Length: 269
Image 1: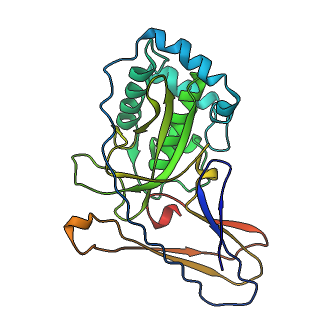
Image 2: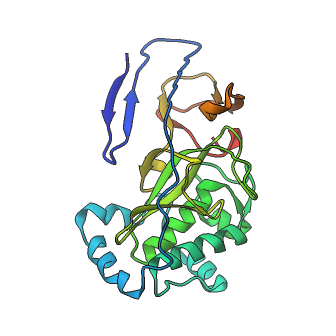
Image 3: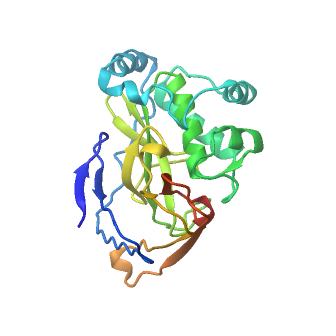
């Protein structure tokens, strides 16, 4: 029996418990959705857009998306990175965010397995290598320092073989949304330097990955655990999907350890 509920961020969740010894737990989820491209953005919001943006940011409902969070927070390493790369708040918030996405896409290398779900942004800032989760946390931390309410989106990317697409086939994906005047929450994917479009399938939002992990659980007791995950994403019009299997092997769990499924392939989980 599962218990459905809506969390603090408006995400639909399902909770279940197994209060007995068991060897296998299988969870199936099948969802059919309709996606579309976002409305075309204006070329610019103009310098005057900062005033209504600051007013919107002052609302208590947006405070959580401006404050530092577990994985998206400013520090001296981020400040040094911004200084070295000439990253500054521009006269126009939309242009500044799009330029920031382009800079992160150019400066970082997409390398699955280089970081883990609990890696701070320091890792990608030091090595220049990481995955979508890392790109997104860095972009959110910078945007919040500019006063732009920013939230993390966990979901999937339907590969369309666009030039330069960076996401492991069949793995989860992450990008960010920014609250902008007249536009509302606007999705930007720094990993692929693109707006969130018909390929992006959002599942949950939060301050960072800690709030929007696709699955999370607690194992009580000894022994070992292994998580096998099969993800299939396809266009209904294209016919039969091709499954992408990701296997996660986990070591001994201490009492109360949280287990979560992260983005970009098995070694990232």
